[in-house]
Length: 128
Image (cartoon, rainbow, N blue to C red):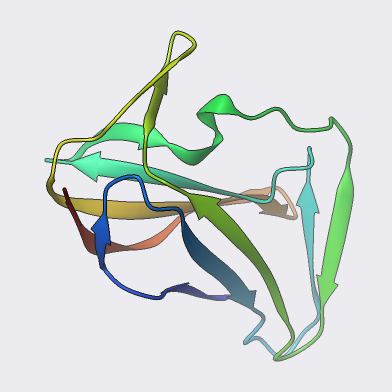
C-alpha cells in the first residue's frame, strides 16, 4: 500500500478550515481488501514535540458498522477531511498555539489481521 496526503498549503491561518485529502493506493500485484469497523476511515492528529495536541475526530461520532473496500492493483481509496485544527476538550474548543506542528495521519482500516495504522505525516505551520 502506498499512502499520500494532500493539503493546499502547509502554512495555515489558525481557525481557517482546510481540506486534507488522504489516499491509499494498492501498489501490490494482488487485490487488497481493507476492512473498517466503523464509519471512520481516517483520522488526523496534530503533534507538537512528539506529543499529540489535537485530533480531528475528537468532536465526532461514527456509525458502528463493518464495511470494506477492495482495491485492485493501482486502484486508490481517498477521503477528504475538513479541519480547523481547534482542540476539542470537555465540550469546549480552544485554538492551538501558533507554531510548527506535525500533521500525522492514521488509517482506521485493517488488511487481514494487520492494522494499517499510522501513515506518514507532514510539517505544517499554524499562524495567527
